[in-house]
Image 1 (tube, rainbow, N blue to C red):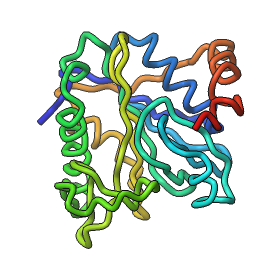
Image 2 (cartoon, rainbow, N blue to C red):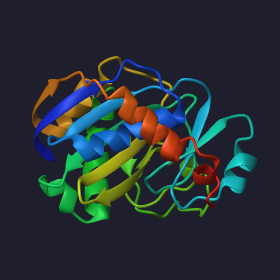
Image 3 (spheres, rainbow, N blue to C red):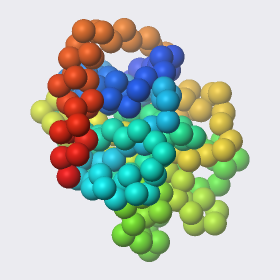
Length: 221
């Protein structure tokens, strides 16, 4: 089931620090008028924590990484070996107004279909494996992706604003396909095209300094 009629795929070639990566996602949400799938990588050893997460617990779980707090919800995620993506749905898109569980389910169903093409069997969690753990991949919730051993391999956090929906996702998979982004875009949209964005460097620097690199932001909880 495609969730968009049209989609722009951005294979972001720039490795960014955690604060910079989060600032780019915020910039996209507030400026784009079209749905975007962004695939990106990290500069350095980073982990992220959801907006409501406890930083002390996060640092205890992963003491050897740098931390950034996301604008979205969800648990703590180690990004040192994951496949990271962001989906932006402007407020004009139906997906932006769907209930959280339904938008989460549809996006992860598209990701499951993508992985099926790569012969990686997965299925949507019904929440039965939920543990309450703070680490995202140790606590499957409804519509997370599980592998054949019922271990969580994909999760995400979402945030809705007047501008639309921000969905930040992570996939833990040792098998990396160079064409996964294109396959995912094909599952998400009826039509899609590759597109290269040039973020306003001054704007990104301002957002990074104002929020994501500030100790007060990281340690707010």
